[in-house]
Image (cartoon, rainbow, N blue to C red; front, side):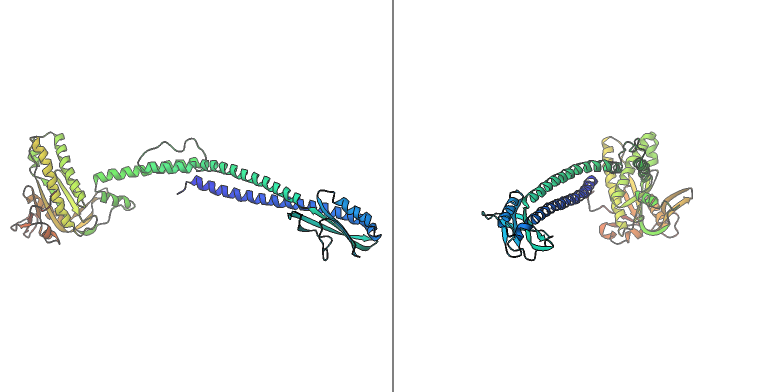
Length: 452
């Protein structure tokens, strides 16, 4: 898009051009009218004088005086022809005059063109006046004036006015551009500041010392952008403590005190470090925190890549949800992929620990699928967005009884579409799970056919 300064310059320049062109046309038209009136006045005076002087010689048929009268008229450089024509047919002529004057009214001059011996055209204008003696019309007096001087004067006037108009348009265009740049400078500054704020960069106060409307707009923009920056910081901080999906839901429904509860179909993955209590017993607190951050970071990365999100970290364990915040028809397959990816990342970390002479870490993972209730749990003053239900409880129990470095899943997960084709399932004997009346027949996932 064109800058606003260019648009304003074009608009202002076009307006000035139209105004100057209209003004120039009016001036040229007025100049032409003035010159035409001067020529007509001059021609009428000449032809009336000639008619008055020729009245007596014409009635007396004095050809000598008539010839001298018309010849004296043509000595004027602006007169190209003169003639005296009587009603009896007598005609004395000098220079160029129309041959036929029949039907020509005496008070209306007419323009025409005559050709000289070199066949060059010359614009002229002819005036006719009646010769009257004692209320009797004896004939007509004719004067033909050269119109070239009028055209030359008009052309010179047009050139002067055109040059002045073009010069003024050029000067006006420069001034309008400078004015447009000055007027658009606050808008450009706002646009640049908005872009910098969007990139997360802080800039100096826009308002400065301006006390006009622009200064008020700057002040409002500063306050608004500061609020937006604070909102972005709140979003980033909230996303570090809760899932980004949940944070987005919370921030998009600020008018609601709590998110609505919703029953959904999903998969739950629990992951736990085997023997973490004994392992951390001999480690200082900072090393325990570093170890947890390392493993939990790998778990969070795997969840993100498999379209899941970490609901919570509970000490050395993690709870990951699939297909809960956003519907996912293959949530069970994504949970299994996430479990494999977690194992692959842990093996990589354990290789580094073995090189350092440190004891490797083993994980156990439990997965279960089914209906869950997603919503707010807690008091009105302290709430947590999570999922509850028998599906969640069973996933936690399966994680507790899963073998080290093993993945144990419930019957509903094993029966989900596409699971049996992607993983080799090893069914276990029915077992009694704490908190459930019925026996549970879990399965252990075999070695994945893909490499991580």
